[in-house]
Image (cartoon, rainbow, N blue to C red; front, side, top):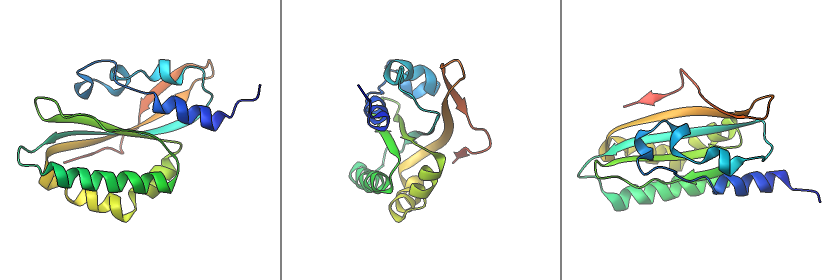
Length: 157
């Protein structure tokens, strides 16, 4: 049987889910089921952008969702988006969401789009703080999954 690896990778990425209730406060590699979801799916490298935030008590949730939905649709249309995890806000108004991309170049191209830029512009109104973390997911020569934080590319408000 011949497997369609891109389709298998896409389906595997869609299965990535939190494994701990406090995932928003954990290192990204500890809060989600990366290994069980990606298992033996072949890939060389993936690019992960993690958005950790604390929402303002006065955040307009309708407006926030509207901007988020538009940016998500634009990212899907740009190509390369394997998984968007939209986290739930916890009792401390903290939230973790992420986008998993086939490549950094595709993520950068999508972030340059108008919908994403507009969503980013309302961030200071909606969040007390936020942090972007960027990672590379790669298979080692031994086949093990490695999640490596890319230093020098994170932004914090």
